[in-house]
Length: 201
Image 1 (cartoon, rainbow, N blue to C red):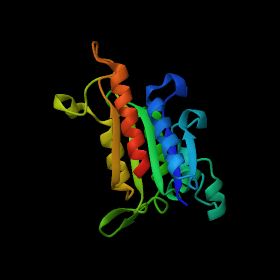
Image 2 (cartoon, rainbow, N blue to C red):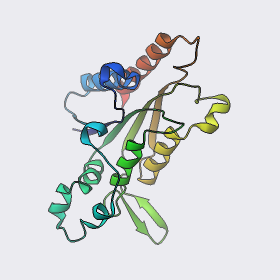
Image 3 (tube, rainbow, N blue to C red):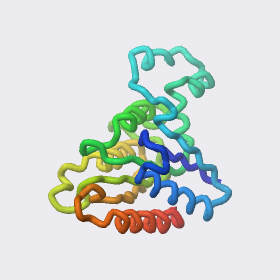
């Protein structure tokens, strides 16, 4: 049985978020084909993820391993390390990801839990896992000159590789806010792509 960590990063509710309209169909299809797997949904806005403080960084220094697993900051790194598959869902904001998702990775990237330092540099401890990112974007960033400005999926792909996860795919709906585009058609194509990838994920 696999453990799937589904990370949602959008303040909008499911029915108002175009991102979640796609990601929820992915999860729904995945669940149909993998009924025995555990799916953990982590809605970052409902979790109230905030910026790390000096107190957060030093508070866990004297804790036992069991206490660390329950620590309000470190618990996310342990949860991440124990997952087998990752699903991220977020809109593009200002050429990147919502800041709350970057804040989440500040919780996740913890030496000795999700990566380690060696004589040859940092090494990810989450090898053998797979990830998929589901993103919606108002402009065109998957091809043409817009690709130079796309920093969101690029960041996620890079940080996941840093943690050892190199089996990484992206589902995107581009051009949703361009006047004249058929938004329904773009969304339908993205949902079908999500369902297809979910069957093999």
